Image 1 (cartoon, one colour):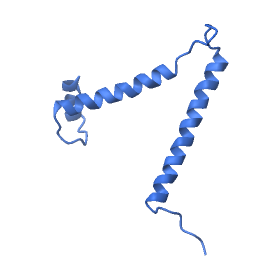
Image 2 (tube, rainbow, N blue to C red):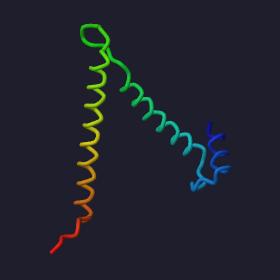
Image 3 (spheres, rainbow, N blue to C red):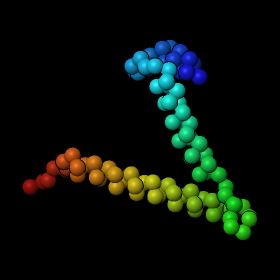
Image 4 (cartoon, rainbow, N blue to C red):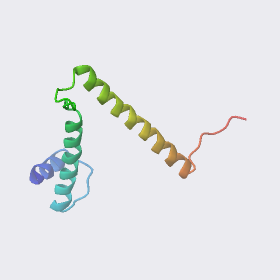
Length: 92
């Protein structure tokens, strides 16, 4: 897969510096690891009773996780802006 990635990078003129194979292997591993987590979190789960989630329960669970992630993103963005002094200009 690393060879295929390098070929595609050269063919499509990606703006990536030359790196060792270990770097690209680690890059792909981390990407697939994140993808696997998203895939697992999106699957229908078993309830404590042993039954599968209904479509409504699944949708509510996935939406709750999505809203939690949005909230976390806004919180971190605010923290970055405050920490580095990026603020809106005041109108006088």
